[in-house]
Length: 119
Image (cartoon, rainbow, N blue to C red):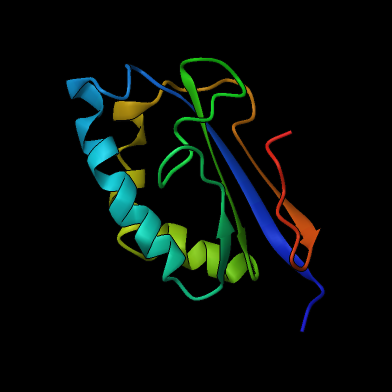
């Protein structure tokens, strides 16, 4: 058993406000996708703000949202991202988010039981 777990952070610059018609499908899928993550093998923890998601947290500006979670290992995260009901909504990300020129995702190992912060 490893003494480390895999943390991930995604950053997304919104094309429109969360309550806009353009982002309705994205917002409507937040709870189902979050529930899917939490029920996925290898899921450990995810960042939450006010409510059941992290969209209320805006550490990088008003039009930027963050998503952060911790997984048992890379295979667990990969299976959730690319082999679950998360995949179809992720493939539509260009409908909801602008194309970022800088890094928008990172992965790093954290000690088992550690809950990282956005900082």
